Length: 384
Image (cartoon, rainbow, N blue to C red; front, side):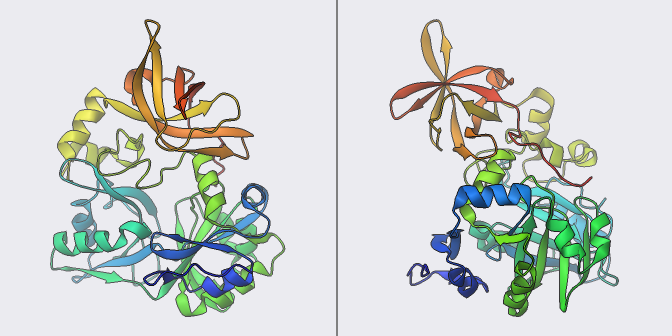
């Protein structure tokens, strides 16, 4: 069995001992000891998730609540809308939305999931999930910016799991049959076996599935219950990365950061019509300008020809007048098991963002051909 890496200030999720018992290879990630893979290896885990149900520990993510002191949902929604470009006010009870914290220049401080709780008596609460590496900065940002009539309540007492794949919902529906009909980007608060959970039909793989928040003290028992089902296997960070890359999903700090806007990141779908028109969020002038005029650069898929992967940092060139001109850079790249070859994402000048545009990738000093490819590489299979 693989021991956890030894680092004095490394944090551990409530499932650390369980990962080690499953034979996980543990690595430092975002300040936590996390499983990168188990005994079967990354490709087997990737394929299992595409075909069955993969169980991911994402308890390193930050979970928190925004609670309006006057009990009015509008108070919390408008407070958060001052920090993100999403239409939070339009959320129905139980509904979830993806958005970004923006700085005054329209750059992305972090991306996050926002849910209006559907549990009776809590419809005025907002539940947020933010990235592990950014959560302390996010909490400080919200404390500094939120009005005094909205409480930020950090939920360090909760674990977070993702069950992803075509059989994932059938697994949890054995405990709560109503989950079978739960639409994509909606949530329910309900018991799964003896464990009270917040369950949302979403995930980070492009597959159908759920994310489940459960008390940290119950996480080990909950995982033991789920993993007793033969359709379920534990999946590590390695396959999580290859799955999200094939699905064309951004990884903060790589594909999006403080230098990129949501429009450049090809995330304009996450900015609803009212917010596009009204603004009222940080960086709104830049975002509205780029929506109208188009951005200078755009995130695209890149399909390298051959078998050599184009990793993060690989420069992208175009052939012009028998010479090469740099037009962009790869931000995520690797092998796509479902595609059967290398896949990548990156930024190119907008004039070169059309699918099938030929490009040259310079990998270790060698020029390799590739093409711009429409995202995603593997079709999304969300339940609509």
